[in-house]
Image (cartoon, rainbow, N blue to C red; front, side, top):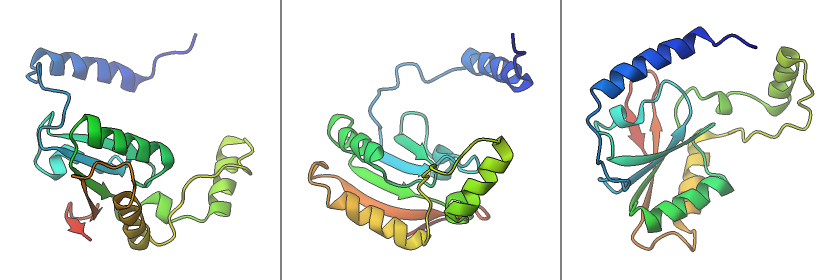
Length: 167
């Protein structure tokens, strides 16, 4: 039997304290601000804090690079119709690992680190972050199933300043 990581014990303690003062019971499942944010899984981004929002104000989808892919697009279309998400913001960030590596180098580093074969691994790397963001915004705006009331916006989060720079 493997030993529980020390961090898990801290998470359990922190959650107990959080639950003791929990005040979001009854918050609806729809985003109160009708906002959906797509951003990176980078731990330097704290989505609600970035925009001064509270629990229940927005939906958040996170992935490597904060970029569109078929599964994310399906989730966005669903949210635009079922969850009333009318304002959609795609927000990658500066200094993103997905935008700072070449595929061969990443595969090699992963293989070296893990001892596993990553030769067929195909992550979505980003060559030109601003151009990729503009393409993602245009692709989503043109999606035929997106709710007609939905608007799509692009922004870049600066991990050094906390500032959001809009396209």
